[in-house]
Amino acid sequence: MDVHEYQAKELLASFGVAVPKGAVAFSPDQAVYAATELGGSFWAVKAQIHAGARGKAGGIKLCRTYNEVRDASRELLGKRLVTIQTGPEGKPVQRVYIETADPFERELYLGYVLDRKAERVRVIASQRGGMDIEEIAATDPDALIQIVVEPAVGLQQFQAREIAFQLGLNIKQVSAAVKTIMNAYRAFRDCDGTMLEINPLVVTKDDRVLALDAKMSFDDNAMFRRRNIADMHDPSQGDPREAQAAEHNLSYIGLEGEIGCIVNGAGLAMATMDMIKHAGGEPANFLDVGGGASPERVATAFRLVLSDKNVKAILVNIFAGINRCDWVAEGVVKAAREVKIEVPLVVRLAGTNVEAGQKILAESGLDLITADTLSEAARKAVDACESAKATMGNR
Image (cartoon, rainbow, N blue to C red; front, side):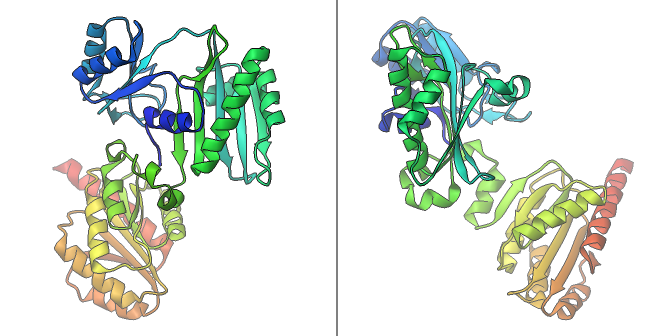
């Protein structure tokens, strides 16, 4: 789960990380009021979306008057901001963050990530702040400072000092940086974070160290014990189909292909997508209906898949273990009758009571394409997709 910049900064500030003064606004008038409350004569108006590279995309405006704050907010609010991280569809800007734009001398990079391969938290820092970490890693990997945290003892003060000195800070700045590094680690650890990026971490003329920007991601499976963070979730920043799927306890991820997938089990879903690609097609989604492929869940799955206008065929691949194929077949037939399906439908069943399930499909009267193996089902789905595209092209 991701949160907005202002939410990440609220969390960091609660753990003692220094951040510039700021306030969120949902309208141009609120933005002007926020600027007057913050004081000063120089502000940054920042579009709040779950993506980076906002500055390059025009999502951050520097303003010196209240009129400029109002105009910048009016320009950003309601806009779909497209960055290199959002894809061509962009993300909607429904709020802006007004922040005092104090001058600074240096930009640094500080990040924390859950390294699943090492099963440790990895701290990454660099003197080259304000750049994408991927770009630094590709062009100058030696510029990265990396420390792996031992989970039994956590990040230690001496490790934070090593990072601070390698960042080229003076004695006063090292003290502030160590505090920031340790407190940010505690925020990451205690909030069940999977990623925390402070880019840039800036050093001011009076030797303060501030988190000028912040991105945080959290472990979805831990949100039951982090209700304050779960309440920060902004559904508008995600795929609406994913939000709808979550309401029905379905796992859905939209992709860019043309063959919709309805599968029970995450592993089987991954294998199904691989087989579709092996057969020359492209999956339109990952959709795991879970162990209980009831008619209601299958019908919801069909609606989710068909909401993607790029879908030209659907592949239903069910392995019945706890379930039975006859129950699943009844669910597929009922769902197919409830939902208007105008694209080819390929169904492959395997497991308990498979013969009974195949009989139900054969006697349903529906225009179904059946298959016995996964490779056969994938091939038939790709062929059906190509036929559907050819038919549409001839109209």
